[in-house]
Length: 376
Image (cartoon, rainbow, N blue to C red; front, top):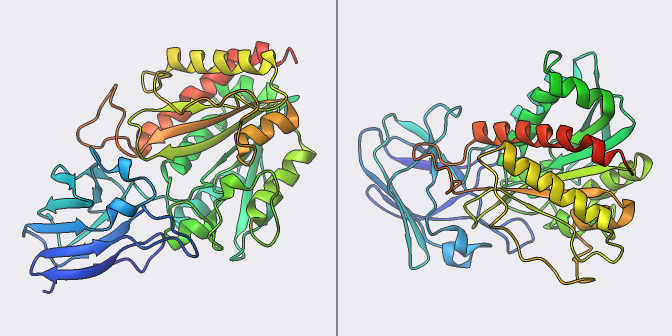
């Protein structure tokens, strides 16, 4: 049987540019109308029991070349369990993956994918529960719904949203964990949160990019997390409809869920540098971060992004725009594509399961700071 590589499926991305027996040279395809690329997802068939070398040759010019050193590709034989490929190396702009597949069909990806089919299963599961309300906030450029689930009846309002950058699939695994936690009728933390907070959750803000196999952009090649200052129906209807919904239900707490290619840790990014920054906002952000660090061994605050100078925040991003627009506690959570170096897992690396556990910890941290959040 001939060895083949294909990616013509939901979130697939790769092209074959050369082959010599069981050695393949591959390239990641750029996001449509964009220069961004880093996400890959493809199937390797017909190589069961033989050593295969896969060389992704265009890594040097990818969106985040610093994401490749120390990175290991993810592999699955059943599309359910994803493990790291042990023999991965990076040098001279090439990521080299060596493996001997156990079966004739295996899948490889930058991170465990979260398919649009699984997304629809997620929406179907939770929208059918009696205490969860569903609505479509609008439609993407490809005509896909921007799904929103509402749970809780409290006076505080929380907006949690994910996958502005579609290749950051760990973000929707996190959302799945958050929904499972919040909807659990027996969980005492969830019971208090539902009583005190009304949650609006948008599990996938970029369904077009997700289905197309993009790293960072929507169908028009637009980075949605640079559109929050001035979203448009022509370029970024996904942001426009979500921000309009936020205007109608102003957040007291907002959380934007992401993945980071280079930093091998979980961390928060905040809103330092916004024009109207208040001491209360800064104190709440530190309290939430410190509380999460106490509650989760998978979270830390030492590594993260550079903090902008006063008045120098990028106001096109959701976290800064919401903090300025609503005076709320607004956060960005970043999870690694590599692993959490403080608590590594040599088999799976950072994983869907760990993303879901971190969601639980974030909700515990929110519960712990509720008294301070209510003092507004």
